[in-house]
Every structure is written in C-alpha cells, then in structure tokens.
Length: 204
Image (cartoon, rainbow, N blue to C red; front, side, top):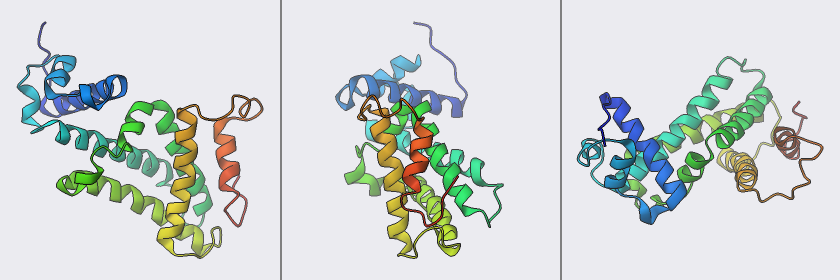
C-alpha cells in the first residue's frame, strides 16, 4: 500500500475521520491506532505524533465534534441583531439539526459518553464542550431578557432547551420516530413546533 502524505494539521484531521468511520461501523472494540493508520493510509507510527493512545484519539474526535457544532451555530447567529434572540434560538436549533443530519456518525460519537468517566484527563474536550454550552446559554439569556423564555435559573433553562433539541435530533437520526410523522411536515418544521411548546412567544 502506498503511504499517503499529509501536512501536519491534515494528518490529525485524517486520523480523526478514519477513527469516526471505524467507531461508527465496527464499534469501540475495533478501534486502535494501528487500524486508524491503515485506514488513513499512513505508517503505523504516524498517529503517535498526535495521540498517545486510542483514548486520546476518541477525546479528539469528541472535541472536534463540539468544535464543529460551535462553529456551525456561531457562524449562523453571529450577524443576527441582539434584539432578535428568538431568531438566534431558531437558527441555532436548525444548525444543530443540520450538523447531526449531515454528519450523524460524528454527532453520535461526540455524545457517546465513551470518555465521560475520564474526561478530566482531556482539557481540550472539556473546553470544547463548555464553549458549546456557553454559546447556547448566551442565546437563552437573551431570550429570557426579552421574555421569550421563562425567567427560571439560566443553567436549568439552557439544559431544557439543549435537551429538547438534542433529544429530537437523536431520535430522528436513529429513526426512532413513527414513519408517518413526517408525511405532512419536515423535521425542521416539527422541531420549531416543539420549541414553541416552551417559548412564551411564537418563533416563526
């Protein structure tokens, strides 16, 4: 097999992509740095320039997932005026849905909890996940200030919003909904209807 050549940053991304594919197709037991190297088309020693072991690789996969979610949400809402937080909430929810649908394997692995017990060992993962939560929290805070969401404790309302969107998205990509639910409406339309169940003002 001819070994592929990557720039330093490209190699890490290639290894993460290969790791996502192995995890999604074969599960955690099949993952190893050797297999990731083979799938990426590089030498067996190449992954060790970025990861000490497969747990570090998994942490990087999850961190990259959170980073992609953050970037997708941030780019979508950054130019929306502060006095329109309900539009930010809508666009953030739809961007979250879009990421999950466009890269469902990476989405599942990001929230798989594989490294949850040892997450303190991976500051990159903690930083990425907290940054995502803080972005959603800021949207919720602005919505509360405009009385679009109830004025309950900020963390609790943020968790409620994230839980609703994440739960819906997870059920959707795992095909847990009845087949006839989307006969007369699209997933994004139903998601907005669900958000309107907990907002004080309708989001259109």
